[in-house]
Amino acid sequence: MADLRKLVASAIHSRNLADDPTCETPLNRILAFAHVPPLGSSLWRLRYANDHREFQPAVALVARTLGSGARNQLVHRIAYRSLWEWLDDLCQQCLGRGHIVIEGTPHARDVCKKCNGNRLHRYSDQDRIRSAALPPKAYPKWEPVFSKAHTLIASADENAWHTVAYKLERIAGIRGLARRVLCDRPILW
Image 1 (cartoon, rainbow, N blue to C red):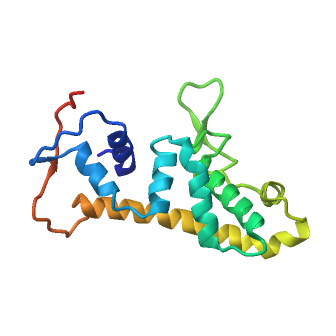
Image 2: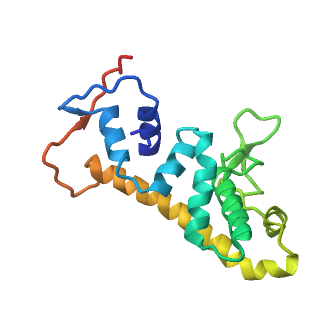
Image 3: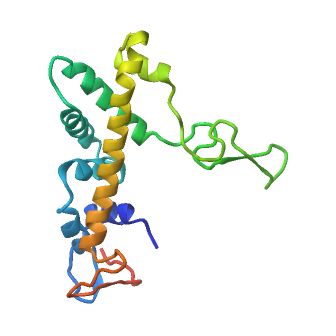
């Protein structure tokens, strides 16, 4: 089954918003997506629907949640960097595959040594210090803010998924009044 995030992104770009009482349609996905809180909605539009205009609003929402005050610019830079890391999270060595094909062989693979097979890129503290324009000695004080920003972004993404899944009655154990099934018929534009 297709990833719910990609189905919603496809629905956002769909030209066919006809309703069908027997199966789940792009219109149902958009209506479910309308219940997602602002940060989750912004994140999904940015990452899965490729709407680059959502980057600055998402940064502002993350920064506002992290806190403001005298160090508002620093918090904004941390939010910017954290969102950038969330968007560009695949290992650059293996391109997110977790393995590298051994040269000279058509199929032999070796585990990627950069990510140890987990497919994710770990940004260094030096990258974060440079992007946030922090003094190196101040980084230990601000590292928990980076961590909080990453947790906030991940939980907003997960919360958006649960909201859409709940509204579409995809979560196990939920009984809806009007059950709909996924149609396997082609979508007519």
